[in-house]
Image 1 (cartoon, rainbow, N blue to C red):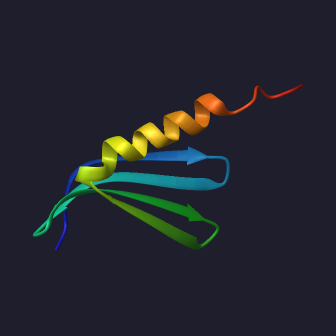
Image 2 (image 1 turned 90 degrees about the vertical axis):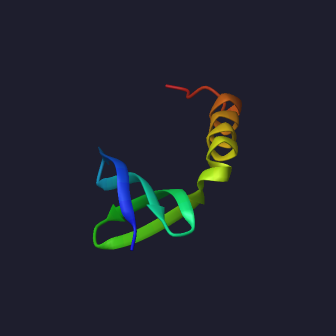
Amino acid sequence: MDSIIESRELQIERKLFSIDLRENGRGKFLRITEDSQGHRNVIIVPMSGVDDFADAIDDVLVSEPAEQD
């Protein structure tokens, strides 16, 4: 059974994102859940990879071209 250490929810347009820091018998992990119109997707990142995951997101956002109006 997982225990939730910390949790946040974000409503972005029609999607609800839940970001949970959890722990179970195998250790801590980040669970990101996207709930959109009855469909649910989950990403689980072990705590050992959270920094690399966040760095990869930062890298992608920094390299994104500026939006044109």
